[in-house]
Length: 406
Image (tube, rainbow, N blue to C red; front, side, top):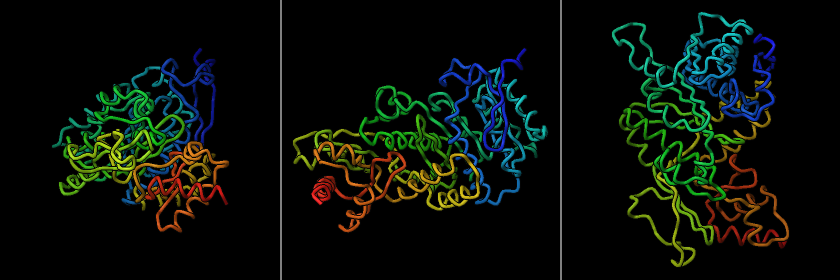
């Protein structure tokens, strides 16, 4: 009977079954087995990241934990697209998902010796890796762990760090509770991520920085540090890829990446602050001290991406035939431009609307004009209508006025 309830779909290198009923639903917990067609971008970039990871460390073999696999499509794609993947632990707590995973493995003729399918809570699976017999020669921590929940990943990160390789492990993590991270539900963010958000026009980046900070702090608890390789936003989710480090000097160095973002709701002034919270300026310098500053944090104010890693991803993307190839190239290119830029951005359409300008100048023209003034500027993947720049807000407004006159 179950065969009559399934439909077959194709994505990149694999075919897979999903429930017919789920194919017409808006993605939600009410699905038989969770599936979101829009997350193909997530899966494409994950495969590219795994490819870059194995290239950087010249891995002949490596393993992967897919802790919340749903239909198993991510794991099956990785097995198809990366021959060096020697073992995949495909896990989901939903018994319907387990049945679907086994069907999809068989459909794609996956070597059974490479796969371990389990029906467990993700933390239970991570705990098994952590509690393995260290005297056993077969003991091996996970090279790569993926956490892809419906909502917040916050309760799984600590155990993931106990299961993952201490040096050069790769953690791939998704958060879909964007309303929380973007400041729509600030009290929930404080409770779940121990950080205060701000609902500004650059709240997507603030949310990503809160998430990376939270990951880093849990790594610290486990005597680890992190290096963010790529952090990106798309549609309704944030996806973060980090590698692990275990040297104490590198862990301590990470502390300089912890800080706050200050924002004036009156004039739009913004800046980052990395010193003691007790030393944070309380009033806006642009408003000459007449307006109190809001703050977001603590959060990660360091780099969200690794430049060399992004260049490798762009190179690998050129070799692919993904349906999202152009979208990925654009996102990664903008992410590359973000490196060494301030930890916030300016939405140009919003600024022009506030200034009541007759038209919105092209972003490339604005960036060129900023460069002429000896400041730096770039696009950002977080917002196609925004730029990052170290120019101050009043000068940016004057520049927009000048461009509108021309």
